[in-house]
Length: 375
Image (cartoon, rainbow, N blue to C red; front, top):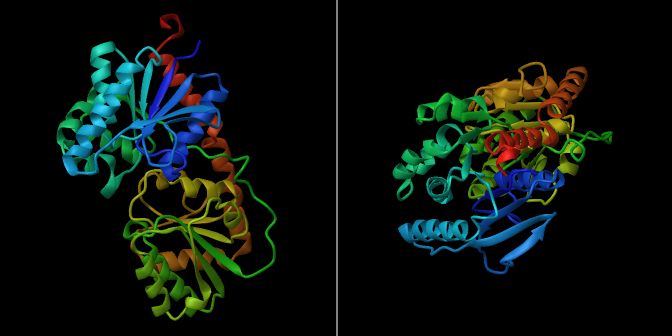
């Protein structure tokens, strides 16, 4: 018998941001491995209260009121009520993100019923889970309780350092990266055509798209003929569209909006760029590398654990359009370098960050926390 696992996450399928995608993929892989796993998430209008998604039972039972502290309180008690009702159905509570009062409810169940609790930290730096929690109603109290969890999962070395600073003991902190489906995200022969630089992500300041636009202008001014595809949406889209027009290079820049499947864009691109000011361990960076793309990314968060400068990509400082331009130019003008970086990028994604490898690490953790003899 495998330990029975309840994954809690505020947003889940069909909402598929980075954290939600990782939770769905992990749950699906666990179910395939024979682990009894189910998901608790928030109730949204138009979505069923209970359904099975890719072989995983999903309960949309977290009900909330949309007003400040009432949101926090209703969220907390809704999760706690579900955990109490289902307490005989799980051995481990896996909080897929620290943010959210599900972590406090899980720790209460640990105290009351000796349930094992795992909490994952998704973001680092200026928007780390630890910093964001401090701004929430009751967040300071919650942060003081989180070291009671059995394990804190960090996706990168920076996150692990932040966890130690937050009061976790070294033996509580375990580094397990995000995973990528390298059988789905894989290289394809690229059609002949113009050089194409691709960015994928939320259009807000933290993603650094404004820096990318300035670097792309410098690239064009230097006579490098390329196209820029910006995939995603967000609060800064209108501002960035205007900035693109102001560069005088709008004809070479395309805002593609959100898409359900970024794979075709990655498989036909020449270069992937991630100019973020803050990252945990970027899913889309993993996906681009799995597609065999050379990458240029900023030296932040988990990116430095993933990209080895000059080997499987190029690292630049955040908010430095000049460095970004030079790195892009170097790759776009040197086909041999681009190919070598892409080959090593694919190798890194497959060997160190495959979904299978990440799932195995979680299964080993679950079994260590709840040995078979205790089931």
